[in-house]
Image 1 (cartoon, one colour):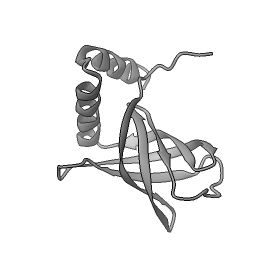
Image 2: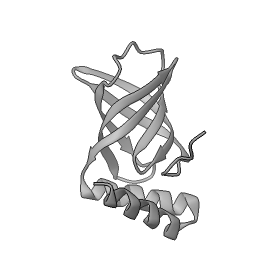
Image 3: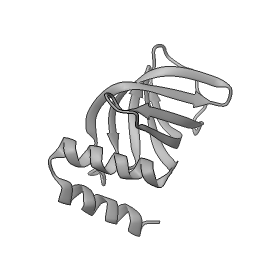
Length: 119
């Protein structure tokens, strides 16, 4: 079993998933620097490698994390996405969210540097 390069944190909130002209309200289950796992309200028949826009409003704030992502796995109502693109402000807010929820800012910065070296 391979070890994940980027830590996922449990973070449940509502998200909006958009693929083409279709839009669904889903629930975020966990998030990492490079992807997210969410649950849809029903099983969606999505083609593999579907490209989506994901909007994650942060509870109690006016901040929304916006990502372009690709579907990498689907099991029943669980959808796993890999982030393809995000704006700098989204990446900054995501890093802060991960730092606060792991209690390990140095570890998250190290993961971010590893990700940046891979670009």
